[in-house]
Image (tube, rainbow, N blue to C red; front, side, top):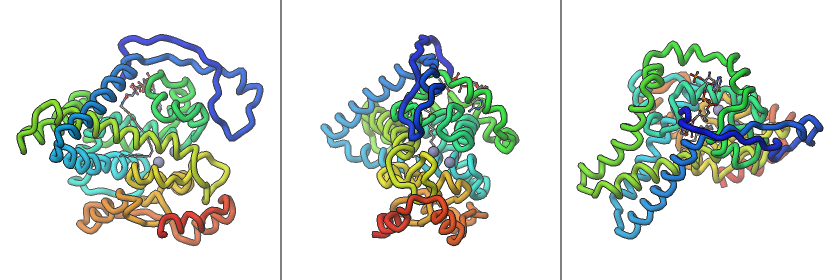
Length: 330
Ligand code: ST9
Ligand code: ZN
Ligand code: ZN
């Protein structure tokens, strides 16, 4: 989204860093070209979503609560199984009906078109925690969580982004259709449809349906996603590579349907499990893809042989692999 109006503030750069700060770093200035439209939109959505929860609990709208929860989990697959594991990393292949379903869910999740999501995510993997990473975690928790959506991107993102190969996405007419008509499609899928389902199917009032099933479901799901970029780049163990920022974070895996095993994912991004261990409870997306594979909708699932993971963990890990295996399997 572009902005209607913005202000321009310069702040001496910084944020948390695992590397010692150099003179260059200290002198560096980030340009905070603030996008007020995004800030206002998110404030309004947060207020509506908190009010939605209040109304749903006060009037005990159990139907809307259950619907928001179930729909939220389903729609999350558009990001995790779709934008992330299928389109960004090509970690498995999907037949047309599954691709269309995932695209509908991904549009409902309102996290930008698949084209934009994949481009930013490929930048994130190629330039992790540097200025060419759109949500560089070295600029602190808030910036990598949601702050990056409130400012214009660093020039390094736009410059280095030119080297990212996006031809697989640009050659897909369905994905480019979504990119072209993203705004109206997103409004219909993210806000209109989830509001109307409880109203038409079991005669709920319009406002609680909107505030809970659309606004709250959306805000909860984006915070869960954003935690992968913030918390899972700051807090947790590094069993596979101790020299990188991404960590293994159980809480984030719960919230983000299995995307919190982020140290593993950055080391082996082509693994459709995004984790060494296939525990469905802590990786709902894995259960979803495996189920689709049973119907033949998902195929060519890529993973990493156990010996390769072991060798890598012994060579570069922080020695916490056994603790993690226990944490997952109990
Ligand atoms: C949201 C996304 O929430 C969240 C993504 C998180 C990813 C997490 C990944 C972790 C793993 C998966 C976890 C899943 C867990 C799910 C759990 C669910 C329960 N390369 O972008 P513009 C160039 S979105 C190359 O406008 P500005 C390009 O030329 C939330 N080039 O930059 C482009 O033009 P075009 C809702 C790039 O103007 C031009 O710059 N959405 C790249 O600086 C302008 O691009 C919002 O809030 C690149 N990477 O504005 C809207 N990037 O596109 C957010 C840009 O024509 N966005 N270029 O080619 C915006 O409003 C704006 O993008 C902006 C920056 C203000 C942030
Ligand atoms: Zn990451
Ligand atoms: Zn990834």
